Length: 138
Image (cartoon, rainbow, N blue to C red; front, top):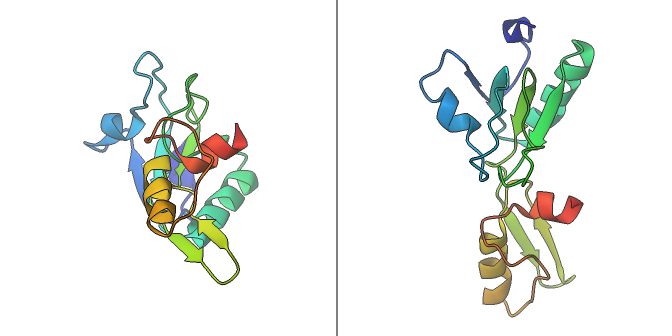
């Protein structure tokens, strides 16, 4: 499969030819080594939606990655496009409605700090580097 055929992708695309490809593939569990076709770092929700649509339209397998922390490496894969949402790390606390909106790339540590500063608890996991999206989904 040729990743270059997906010319409608949006975000920063890292292919096997890029110097930072191997670093972009690294996961928390160093025993798991995956070799995706490329990694696309999304900078907006629109990027995510567009990239998923591109993959469906061109029949390209993809994985969504937020924190690179899946124990079995299921947030990456061989011969697929990794859609990375780690840059979507906005936290919006609405104290009037007592809600919080978290971007897909937010990690536990940032959530604990943002909510703790406002006096709110967060029932997340014990590891501060785990992505909240992945933790929430299991």
